[in-house]
Each structure stands twice: as C-alpha cells, then as structure tokens.
Image 1 (cartoon, one colour):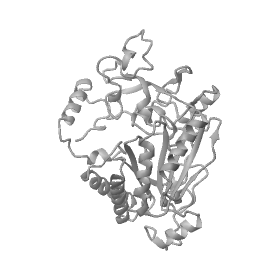
Image 2: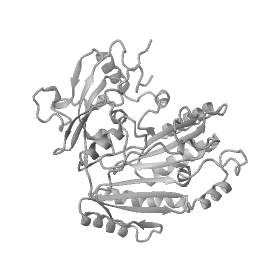
Image 3: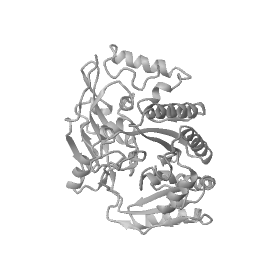
Length: 417
C-alpha cells in the first residue's frame, strides 16, 4: 500500500521581509501566487520564473534544484532555511533554525556545524513544510544581446564568445541558446501534409518552414544584461562589443528600464502540441490532451568541445527514433551549461509511448557512457544510472536507513538500485 500526501492546501506566504529580501513559503505556494503577492506589495524584487506553468509549486521546483530565468535563477542556491517533517513524525529546522531564538536563521543557510538543508533536496529523507527563499533585488536597467548563428559549424566560436563574456565579468547576466527547430515549436505544429505523414521532418520541409516563419539562422542565442545603473549595463554592452568585433549576426536592443525583470509566469505554450494532429485547445491540459514530452536535462562543462559533443549525440539519437532535435541550453553558471533535449510526441498514436521511452533510454545511456549526466531526475533517468564508483551509494543508504528505517518516505527516490 502507498499513500499520496497532498500539500497543495499548505499555500500560505508566511513571512515577507522587504529589508533583507526574503519570503517564507509553504509547499503549496505557486509561481503565480508569489508573483502577485510581490506585485501587490510593490516589492523591489524580481521572481525567477521557470518555463513551467504558473500554478506549479515553488518549493517543489527548489526540491528538484530547478532553474529559473532571472537573477537568482538557480533557486536552490538561494535558500535560507527549511522546516522538515521527518519519517519519525518529528520536525527539524535546518541551520540556525534549530535554535528557537536565533535572529539569523532565515538568512544564514549553513548555521553552525554540519549543514543539512541540501540533503532534503532531490532526496527522500523528509517532507519540506516551510522554506525561506531569497529574492533578487529588481534590476532597474536591462539590455538584450540577440545573436543569430547562421550555421551549425559556426556554433563553437559563438560559444567561446559567450563563455568569455560570462566568465571574465563581475556583472550578472542571463544566457541561453536554442536550435532553429526549437524556435519552430513556438510558432507552429508539425506540418503533416507537407511532410506527407512521415517523420522526422526532412531538410527540405525544415527549410520551407524556416523561410515561412523568418528563421534565418541555425541557432539563436540571447544574452540579457542587467544592472542597477545605466553605466553598469553600458560597460557590459561595450565589453561584449569588443569581444564580438569580428563576429556577425549580433544585434543589441534598446536600453530597457523601470523594473524590466519582473515577468509574470507564462501560461502553458503550444510546444508540447507539436506532433498533435489537432490544434491546441484554448484551455490546455497536455496530459489529458494526449501530448507526450520527455525532457533530458544534461549538465555540461561550459566549453565548446563538451557542448558540441552533447549536441551531436542528441541530434543523432533522436533522429534514429524519428524525432526532431529540439535542443536548448541555459548557462546556469560561469562553468556549467544545462543542455536540454525534449522528446515531443503524440501519445494518442499506438506505439509512440514505447518509442519515445526507448529513445530516451538510448540517448541517456550514450550520454552517461561519455561522462554526461542529467542534473535532475525526470521520473525514469535514475533507473538507468550506473552504480557509483566510490562509497556514495552506501553512504546514502546508511543515512536513509538511519532516519527512515521502515522506508516510509518515497522508497527508491533518487536512489540507485
């Protein structure tokens, strides 16, 4: 027997400190709810929204070490404290929260002695019932550097530019890039008639679609530079120009101001309906509508060589299973890029579930054999992981057995069999 614990009604924003920039949330608080709360307070902070739906849990995303699209985007790096329900039925507080009178519990994550807050992320050791997260001060100015990369073979030199610009700079910025086919999913659905019912898309049909939707590049990279003064942003733009003086396809937008980073969480888009033979409904529910989507999110060193190797494997394997390489990447730090390969399919078609899962498994096994691993589980990835080459697995089981000897909480979650 198993029991599902529904935390959605634990949906209170328990504390907001404008001076120190943090909020304490229950697990049912959604992206939309926190956005509207901050807006109602006229708060000088931005919310790093993810590509998921507005009604998704912020705590749930942090538990998976999810990544948002704004300052403090790597949300799990900006956690102040946790309240956790243990398998024993007892509560514990991480960091200085273990002291009832601590003044710094919400803003000093580690506390004194061993730090335990991170072990409750991507694990089955407890249920997080309260979480304090830091909020990024709202940048006043921002500017977009739009980069069109004409050919696949040109990608490495642009990646070197992006790495240099990101690494040798003290200012924060957001960098992402997408394959041309990924951009197509934002504009249309699979052209079954033009493709004569065949998959994947032929190069001729791809070129026709790209021309139709004015996609005149192989890759699109976007860099968002932001700061608190115009001079700070201008210095970054000038630095980028100096690095890119011999590179074509770079367009710099106008300077934006007045708190441009507070974007509202977006509703579900049409991407997951790419392979469906009917138009997306006005009220979307990809699950009941029969959409299929499996995402592989791979952590890759921020080098042109490593990123190129991963992209090549992704492109080749998904083609073998008759899917398009919808590849995108997010530069989550100066040293790491998350390269994402979504497998988009139509679950209403016989055999497609099995084919998509086989594609996922083949691609993940190949990537891991070359040393590239996903940074989060997608519900299937962990079952394919090899055993650790050291004592990590034993240590993890020792902790689990010590705090949950009866295996009450999520047996097997983030564990290697």
